[in-house]
Image (cartoon, rainbow, N blue to C red; front, side):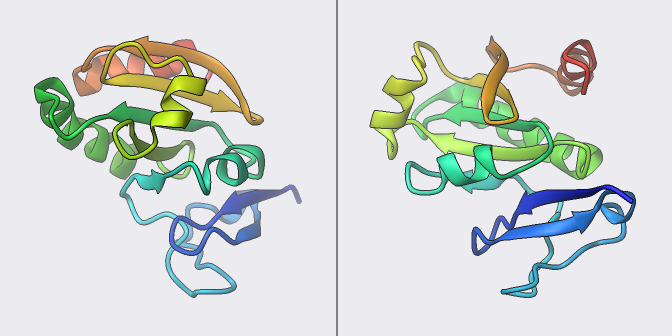
Length: 144
């Protein structure tokens, strides 16, 4: 039986979970919250490295800003994708306003920008707000 490391979206503790039980509503061993709650987790400069390097599944990051109209219109689509596609993909949101250094490090030039990380490394990126079906198709093209 294969186990995966998954970082808790609530307390940032790494949990080792059996891969075949990810869909069984697992809870964090430390904080007891749901590991997959159907909502994107908040990514920050403080937790990004741990989440990206200690999560053994693809992580899709929505880089956004509060003043961005397309970001606001895309937020419910990203939320719906998290509800539908977790636990196959971890969904996370990064505020480029609150995490400027990380946004610069990741070379974010326009928002919204989606970055897919696999094994802690950027695997793909796309800019712009996508409809849900187009987002799912893009993820399929990336092997997710």
